[in-house]
Length: 168
Image 1: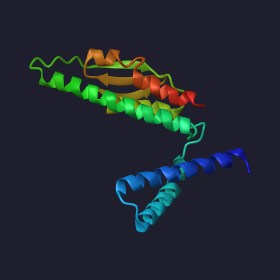
Image 2: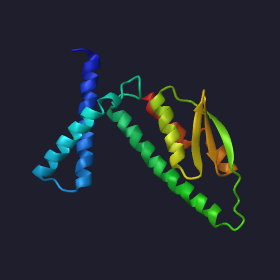
Image 3: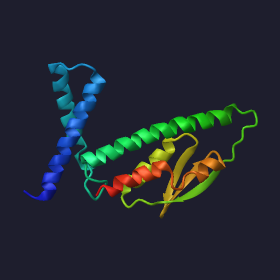
Image 4: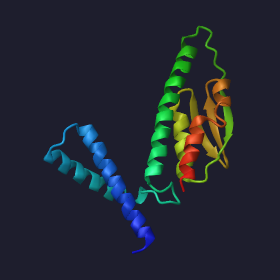
């Protein structure tokens, strides 16, 4: 059996158990019926989405290290969302509305398409910023304030997405 086939099976098994775990969390109870329904649902999701399981070239192998770095990215993202929400609330509640909207170009530092898209989505999820496009080797990002625009280069979120690429 080829190494690619083994990696593919490993990714499928990891995704199956992650989906089943997610099902158990959402469902909230562990009964035979619930586990069977979750198993069938997970298999169907994997079958209908088999073409989007990531390979090493696409986004990175699904390893424990990759999952660890991905979970730390999620934790940092939550902190950044809370901080940005507070900043946007201060701006909106200020009678002077101290906004300085601008478009900025941020260089793309990622090799893999998955990480490029992931960073664009992370920026968009953070209040006050929006990824408009990726043109060549640059993101075009709209920022609500000049400070938000200047904070995009070398941000903590960018560094955490870069760590996902270093796992290879």
